[in-house]
Length: 119
Image (cartoon, rainbow, N blue to C red; front, side, top):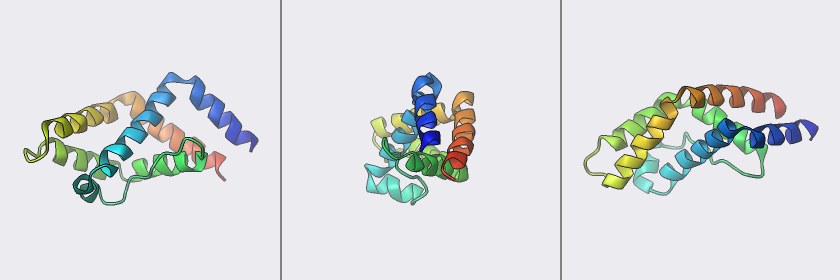
């Protein structure tokens, strides 16, 4: 319990951590709001919960384990002329955020840290 409180406090105090968890949520939302997009990704992205830290660990682990699939799915959507322009732009924006060094580092860091806290 105490370690969960420490994790909560640490994440809420760090702008980059907040941005990273917002990115995780936007990835899940982007794919889950459309059945065609969800089918492209399959079921490799986990939803982020604001109340359950184990869900954050699941989301980080899922992203880390399926990084290439997520990138590939986003590129497929971004380059698909059958998708709406807004959808392609959104995929491009998420790709840009995933390519950011800080988000790569946050994904590894939080995946490892939350995995240890959830033991």
